[in-house]
Length: 330
Image 1 (tube, one colour):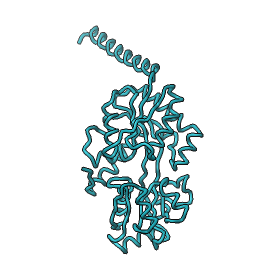
Image 2 (cartoon, rainbow, N blue to C red):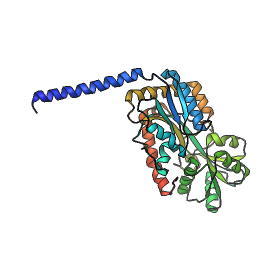
Image 3 (cartoon, rainbow, N blue to C red):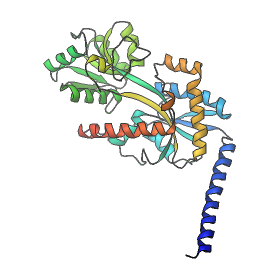
């Protein structure tokens, strides 16, 4: 190619890049100009919905436009997530996703979207840690004794869960794999019903969110053995971690974040992420989330890149575990 043609081609290429950049900046300056919808794929009034509404109300202050919640339920959250996957990539329709919708569903459901390739991560919001709890009459005083008791009574002890492929169910799968124990899972229509039976002694143990279990732990109607994460949690500072209790690496928490459709301009993602960072930096919001037993991410964990890395790492960890256990939702 002659030098003059190469020069013209290079000039045209640089011009295209410059025009695209100007367009991106222009959109970011104009964004948002109307109401933003955050789709919560679970019913109103639930724990995910409660966190999402606190966050959305505070994002309004940074973005200068209303941020509303729309609950789109069904199929373990996949209907709501699908709506965002197929929405316009303009930053006006977002997904408030969780560990179950953004990781687990890809292994247990046939989805009409790709969890990694059809979304742009915006920011991690919070982490809902889990506890290992048992009925008050359980003979074990600590986690090691609990493992010994379960090994001595294979397939006779009962663990309550709010359903197949729930966080509680998968925590039980991982626990049995790591401890070489075997117990029977009893699915319930909700955590509340399972907890009632645990308090009554009709089932033996549960893997439950700190927010759900702590009222009963404080009332001493059930026993708590360990938190399923590396660090102790603010809402339960006296309960040891699984590392401290003798089962290192038994980690599971139901984290929550915000995603946008694939192709949403980088500058718009930046505006949205700033709103998330502002939310998590607000002392009033931090306290409200702490009251819901939510652990908040550090500054380094609040970027879109950090949320994307977390999601990929969790998929790499959990999909093989789920598939090896043969767990599917039809």
